[in-house]
Image: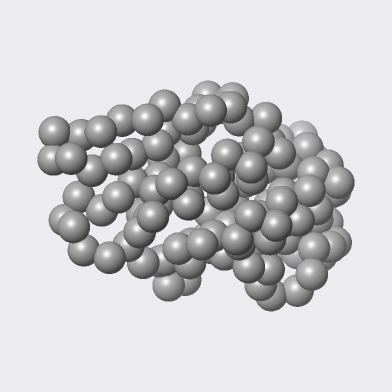
Length: 138
């Protein structure tokens, strides 16, 4: 359904250091750096058919996190969720909500962690442990 997700940054080099480390835990490599005709810099991280972008705002206003918005990154294990979280915190992110761990939801058992990136964007690392019975046969 999605082609890409893009977040704004007030310090593109700080964001690059943060996302190089954090997205590296998922296997993403070095981003493609693009400088648009307007002069603003964008970073494009590509991995498994998805693109995550970080940009200096085109309108030259301050970048802000979306209130109520969350970007979820699919992880392959609970250990990868924890590594994502710990790497984010070690690189200037902030742990928020409950500590990384197992949760029950209408989606079944999930292991997740939430962090804010240095610009206040809310990120979720998530691993679906068990799907509900209703998903059987889909």
